[in-house]
Image 1 (cartoon, rainbow, N blue to C red):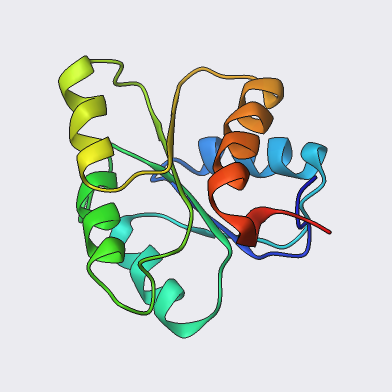
Image 2 (image 1 turned 120 degrees about the horizontal axis):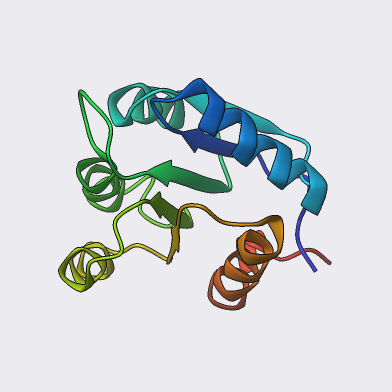
Length: 133
């Protein structure tokens, strides 16, 4: 189903949350996973290497997930990278804001590997780069 070879960037200010997300991605079958602790750090990494997916938290210091998403979508070299927002925010206005800014999907904490996989499958239907052969 997925292209398991793609490089994934997990962005979250909490090391524990990054580890949880990385472990869930590995359970799904992805192996090439990198991490960043905020949007600014994430952008630097995205600009220096090729990634096939971003899984980012919303609430972070320095540059939050929404600013990070907008920076990616406004960069011609990065704008097509699939972006999954992870957050504790379930408010409708926030979801709408993320969708308007170009998020590919949205996942509310806490979540299971099954939910993560479902969200990624939905993204893969729209973004062929995430699909495997």
